Amino acid sequence: EDARANEVDRAALLKAFRAYLESNDLQADWDQTRQCWNDAKALEFEQRFLHELTSQVNQTIAALDALERVLQQIRRDCE
Image (tube, rainbow, N blue to C red; front, top):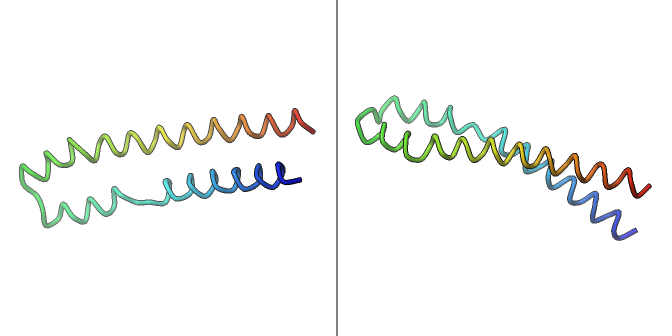
């Protein structure tokens, strides 16, 4: 029973983390910032950091999806 509770906790944690990543509207915040910070350094910051961060968030969401599918399959196999 403890193993089942831990599995449920992990699944809930994965879903919560995925929801957080998806709802964190970094692009909207950046768009607002760019209204008052619009120079070469802002463009450099966007290219050096924000593009990579967005890519990493998308990769993390895809990995969480894959992990969730694996956990679901394990649960079905163990029933």
